[in-house]
Amino acid sequence: MANTIDSSAPVKHNWTVEEVNHLFALPFNDLMFKAQLAHRENFNPNEVQVSTLLSIKTGACPEDCKYCSQSARYKTDIDKERLMEVDKVLEAAAQAKAQGSTRFCMGAAWRNPKERDMPYVTDMVKGVKALGLETCMTLGMLSEDQASTLQEAGLDYYNHNLDTSPEHYNQIITTRSYQDRLDTLTNVRSAGMKVCSGGIVGLGEQANDRASLLTQLANLSPQPESVPINMLVKVDGTPLADVADLDEFDFIRCIAVARIMMPKSHVRLSAGREAMNEQMQAMCFLAGANSIFYGCKLLTAANPETNQDIALFKKLGINTETIDSSVDDSVEAATLRTKMSDQQNSDLFYNAAG
Ligand code: SAM
Ligand code: DTB
Ligand code: SF4
Image 1 (cartoon, rainbow, N blue to C red):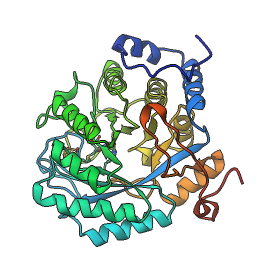
Image 2 (image 1 turned 180 degrees about the vertical axis):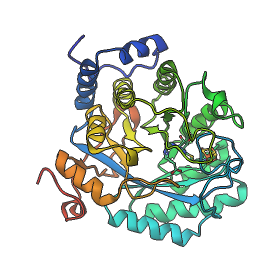
Image 3 (image 1 turned 90 degrees about the vertical axis):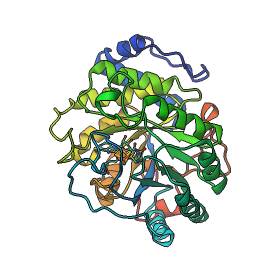
Image 4 (image 1 turned 45 degrees about the vertical axis):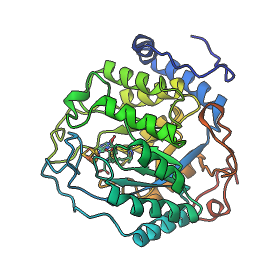
């Protein structure tokens, strides 16, 4: 195995599933080493970006995603809520900022936003932006016009996951196609926003599906700036409530392979951390994950308490990343500058370097 990674080499967009399966098949220590090399060529290995999630519209979704607590088709134990008032969203964003988050991600249980929703969501974007936070939304499918409207309002990132491989997709969702998802990503990119796109593992897919999902993501050109890798959160009442657990090493391998294939992207250790012990999360950071959701709730599922994350970062000597908003971090020439903010130097966040 070659021990070096050339950071000046162009990002590769022509991966084959076979090549990716070879990466997955490397001895674990070799794979981790290769991932660390890629990580260190492109990022400070001791920094992690933190985002806070808020569900701005919960439940009663018409889609049939078989993993999801929010689909109206399954009987799950969640409190359905209408679209939140803009002021309430801004209160939550201010709180997230006070807790050290740099990005505020708003999610809605929609197939796609309706025209009548757009004035509210654009006001949310403008308000969150005015607080000095980066903005991210995940609202389902977007048309070209809707993507432009959100971009003009100041939306930095749009999250829309491919979720799984094209081959496994019909086992998981039948109400929108893989191509619909790719079309939304094209609309987001064409409107000039940054793309956050990843998937879920532990859906009962085969190893080849995980390689195929990562191939789809890495062959997007440009690659997504942010790649969430979610471990399925099993929700009672959904068709996937009793699916077999994915071996934790297979999850870590996914992170490592994503890091190698998308060396300049933030790889997000996303849903599922609540069920992971500290050592497992540390292995994910070692494999190249450098972003998390921060705050005790994801959309409807639990996430570790903030004080647990602060304690883990302290043990690992990890600092949280802040982004100088004046820097253009377009994906192929990411020039992320990181520094500890005054706030993170306070006792809210331990500054491992301090
Ligand atoms: N309704 C919008 C959509 O699906 O495009 C946005 C919100 S949706 C909840 C965002 C993503 O969260 C999904 O695409 C999926 O990848 C992830 N997700 C949802 N439920 C999950 C679960 N139980 N476990 C892990 N990831 C989940
Ligand atoms: C993503 O990839 N993961 C987040 C975010 N994008 C919107 C959502 C995780 C949802 C986990 C299940 C829940 O909270 O209901
Ligand atoms: Fe609806 Fe999104 Fe859940 Fe699918 S993942 S059911 S689209 S909220």
